[in-house]
Amino acid sequence: MTGEPILRAEELVFSYPDGTRALNGISLSVPRGKKTAFLGPNGAGKTTLFLHFNGLLRPQSGCVYWSGRRVRYDRSSLMTLRQNVGVVFQDPDTQLFSANVRQEISFGPCNLGWPAAKVQEQVDRAMAAVDILHLQDKPTHFLSLGQKKRVAIAAVLAMQPRVLVCDEPTAWLDAAHAAAMMDLLDRQTRDGVTVIFSTHDVDLAYSRADYVFVMKDGKLAGEGHPADIFLNDGLLARADLAQPQLVEIYRDLVEKGWLPPGRPPRTKQELLERIPPRGGRRCSK
Amino acid sequence: MLLIDHYAYVNRLSRVHPAEKIILALATLLQCLLSSSPVTPLLAALLMAGLVIAPAKIPPAYYARLMLVPAAFLLPGALAVAVCTVEDIQSLLWGVQLGGRAAGVTAGSLAAAAAVLLKSLGAVSCLYFLVLTTPVADVCAVLGRLGLPALLLEIMTMMYRFIFVLLATARRIYTAQASRLGYSRVKSSFYSLGRLATGLFTKSLYHSEMLYLSLSARCYAGKIAAPPVSRPLSARNMALIAAVQLALLAAALWPGGAGR
Image (cartoon, rainbow over all chains, first blue to last red):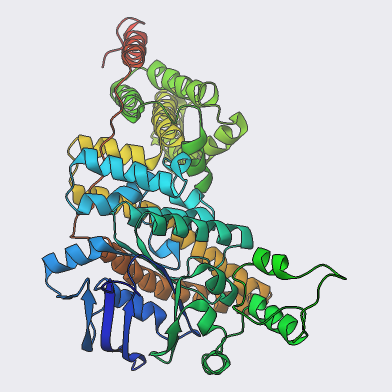
């Protein structure tokens, strides 16, 4: 982790009115400029934490730091925070309210009070970034779920956030659309946006995230580089997480002497390249 | 209703400037309502049917079905106008004696009924033309330009959007209930329908809360600004609209000045 963390939570506690304690004194630092995954069972507090990141929820105790500064909850501070930290909700239908796609995406930039030309420019840029320019005049109820998710992301990207927080961006998407969604998030990271996302897909988090946080019962159960997290059997068991298939297969191959011990491969391609041909040199344990 | 909305986006006239379509529809509507000649609404209905079917390419069968909807209340309405009561059965074209009075139709009442029927048909055609060719977002943009208060426009846009969310939610609940035999018997149907209504209500509340959160996440400050429409009006279309309106006016005045 280099430089100052872009977002930091310190001893956050939050309970919902029905008494559910969603965050239970969680502290963590999100690295700047990376793609960070949050894993954990349902009800671990991932969404609640995300809603704290841009001040939609206010912690009952503890505080949030944005770029080293403590988050304040007055109107103008919240405006600045919400422009910089964009949250994309899991169900796009709760987020999309406009009659057509272009209007939907213009909503955020218009709220920032930008001049019309800048609004149009940013809306076009955001639509191009998620590849939905051809949908701009469509009403949102015409779109497929994958398209709606893209519109929801563009609606946040158009505000030029420095952090993009996505709650389960691949939920309900098929494998191909999920991969395309992760490519889209990769492009954002390359453009200098810090990306934070939650997922239940350990394989996805393992091969696509730069850094991983594991949550359980409103607390942090572990954090680190994906390779370290997913080799930590104790942590995985505590958080009810499965081991990524790649790691499981790799470890089995090492154990049976087909591969030398080392860092597990991050992608399927990498694993296949490491497996030697039959009759070739076999590694001794 | 949903199909109307679908056609509003996919018809061949959807890319025409919305103000042009609104001007055409409203000007023709006005002529229908003001003209006392039966020719105007008849021509208006034919004109709109022609526009909807030929350039906009809406399937004629669908348009005919749509016209049946207002017919369901126009025909009884016209019937009520056509039937009148008089003292003397001799003055009726057709009628029955009811005690001291007679009920039936006269030449005058028939003409009045026909006028009402035609007028309504013409007016409905104008509105159908507008809703079948113009997406709601475009209509709202033009209304905004005309100075309709932003609050009203926001409410319109949101209602429009959430009609679809509400319908989709209702459909999902209905499917979930039907797949567990919720509508297999009359008694269970009533029960399921009640649960559907309460379910819709609570889901709507939840939806509105989530929407407020997601709007706040994008710096919502109580105002939804709509981006302006930047397309220019087409001089050719405006000239055509003016010509059509003049022709309608001329047709209404032609047979010896039926008057307006």
